[in-house]
Image 1: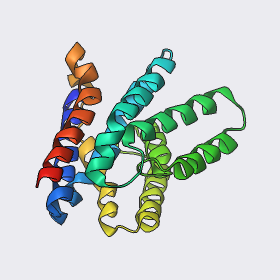
Image 2: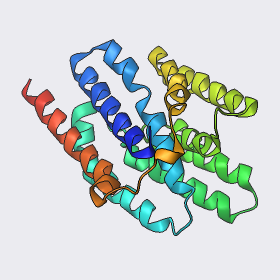
Image 3: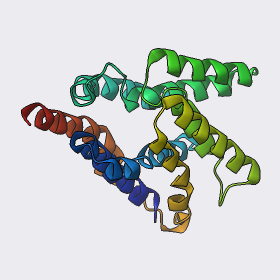
Image 4: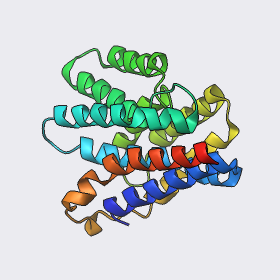
Length: 209
């Protein structure tokens, strides 16, 4: 699998997850637990590339605003959508680069994500950070951090199905960097448009049904 294929796969899992929410189908929601960590891995690959990150942060916030009303209609709560989750993660990582007191900055990012009420809370910062550190099959230290983060979030979100996110590296094991291709303009922006559109479509269906 290449990076684009993993991104498409993550989008498919997210769609399955959200349809499962509507149908109250637990098996579909279990499958969907891998979606956010996979998107976090894609985010991490983009983040590691050199260049100004401000356009990325601006884009995440813009599409977060566009996605928020459909998100609230579908999930029927006031939680901020994952565009804002990744925006908080990106801001945290930006400040970690700039300042020496990295632990303090990271702690602030984790707490801020929780207080702001973004989707996945503190895990929205921890997961992308761990994915930035993912290399090959992952070191013992990485697996320890990954396991603790997923168990911790499963406990804090009070949803036992979240533990299945821990299996995400099994998908990443199929990633082959030699198969990566330069994405087309559509592939680069696909998720930004797909996210609010699929939320709006499903929210409309849920309202009608």
